[in-house]
Structures are given as structure tokens and as C-alpha cells.
Length: 365
Image 1 (cartoon, rainbow, N blue to C red):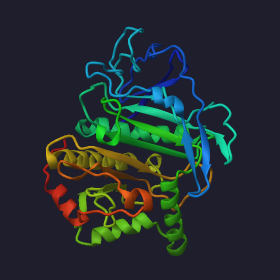
Image 2 (cartoon, helix red, strand yellow; image 1 turned 180 degrees about the vertical axis):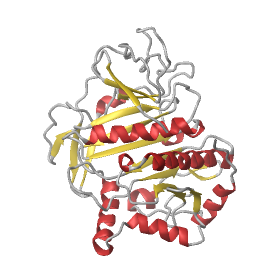
Image 3 (cartoon, helix red, strand yellow; image 1 turned 90 degrees about the vertical axis):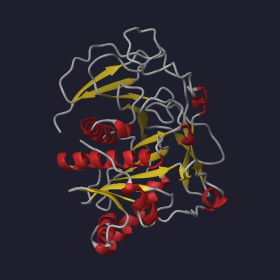
Image 4 (cartoon, rainbow, N blue to C red; image 1 turned 180 degrees about the horizontal axis):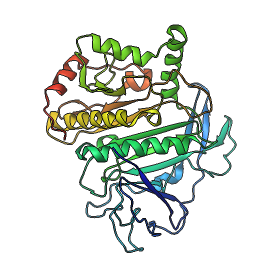
């Protein structure tokens, strides 16, 4: 744990770049970009009257980079301004920059007229570079770096959430081609939506109903019951944070990480809670890789309080992992029941999955 030093630069195409480190560093003024011109886009939202939710349209993303040759690293540290890079040289540890092909942006333009309601695709899409080592992975980073990344996520939640056009800040990571990753360097993303997205809205609705009825948090009470249930589904138990395969897991080997107290966001966590959160995160990711002795594809999704200007005492920040594997060497695809009806069928019991993950020995300094 320690202070966070931050520098902001502007790329030639106008996109912002933020560099973070634990120690003071000279950022210089060189903020590279693959192009001097911003990618032209006109993202917009259309209302889905049957589902009661917004759908984002960003056709310019069809031209984004997809599975480049392995020898080409778009985030390679270089001093050549003509090289196809997104980050500068220097002793920074974590970098964040605005996505070159964003689904949401500060100035998306006017939406087209259609037979359903439309609105501009305002918001933000950022890329979070976890390390300068292109061969690393989030779980293989040391604990100090993971703690810094948690601080960076908290900082971006604060900055993005302060914008009038942002109602929900959503950090996430897609890992593996099995879940659609287009570039192989270790990175995540942050979407800042102008509305609360459907999955988060449904969870928050359930949490608010419980809070109004019981005067306590749904997730906080659920975690307490999980611990009281002989910790059968617990994968990691720290002083402040817990990781477990939830009793109601929809995906095989699904894991949640959450603080034991009902903190609404990463920004609201203390330094000790963030450190414990990083330890839980590293433990889970190493166990995932160790379970089948290969890089484990997953979606990591953060759920936290909206930034819509309203109080949310019901919100409890947590991470949900949705693995791509159903069983070893067999992918989990969403079939008719899951995609069409929204009813998930899991063929692995949470208790069995937790036991397998607990059995994986990991070393954390």
C-alpha cells in the first residue's frame, strides 16, 4: 500500500491518457497514438420496447483491430512516434486511455430518427493496461501491482462518476479468445454508461427491496449466511474480503469477490480493504489457471453503486466472474434456455466447484 501518483496526457488524436505509479515519475509530454486523427463515429442508443432497455449501436467498431499477428504489440513501449502504439515509455505501472473505437463517447453526435426512441451514445469507454509486460496476466502480477490496479479502478470510478453524462461506471476484463478478446496484451476496460445497465439495475432493484424490508444489505447478509454454512463454498476468506462460489451460481465455477461490509464502491473501500481485495483477486485468478493448468478464459464484471446523483444505501460492491469453461476442455456456450429464456442450467454444483478451487494450492507473497 502507498500513495498513487498520476499524470494526464493528451494523444495527437485528442484522446486522454492517464499514467499511474506508486512512486513519483516523469511523464514527459509524449502521448503516442496510432493515428493523428480521431476515429469518426456516431454511436447512438435505441430503446428496446419489449425488454425495456437501451441497445448501443457503434458501427465504426467494425474496423477495430482484431487478432493481429503475434509479433505486433500495439502497446509496445517505444520512442518512435510513428510506431503503432498507445502508451509511452517511462516508469509508469498502469495506464488508462480512451478507447480508439468507443461504443460511448463525450460527443457522439445526433442520433438517427427511428420508429423507437433514440438518444446520443454519450459516456466513455476506456482501456486499462495492467502492465508493460505483454506476456503477463492479471493474476500473475505481484500483489503490489494488483493493489495499485484496484486503486486505479477506484480513481476512474470517482472521475467518470463525477460527469453529468455518466450514471454507471463498469470496469471489466474479458480474458481469452473464447470470450471475444481481440488483443492479447493484459488489459481491461471501463464503460461509463449514461444509464444503469440492465443486469446491474436488476441486482440493485433486488438489493433495494431487501434493504427497505430488512434495514440491512442483501449481499452483506448473504455473505454472512455463506460463512455460517460451514464455508462450503468459500474459496478465500480474508480479514475484510471474501471470495466464494455463490450458492446460486448460474455458471460452473462462477466466483464472487466482495468486501464483508456493505461498501457501495471501490472508492469507498479503505486501504486495508483494497489490499485484501487485491489478495482475493490474485488468489481466485491463480486458482482458475491452476485448476486445468492453462490460461483460464473468463469475464470479470464489477458491480457497484450508480453515479446518478441518487443515494444507494443498498449497493454492495462486488466482482462476478463468469468462466467460459463448462468442464475441462469444453466451452460454455449460452444455448436456447439461457439466451432465449434467461434460465440458466449449470451442470456443476457450487459446492463441488468450490471444493476443486480450494484444492488448488497457490502462493501469494
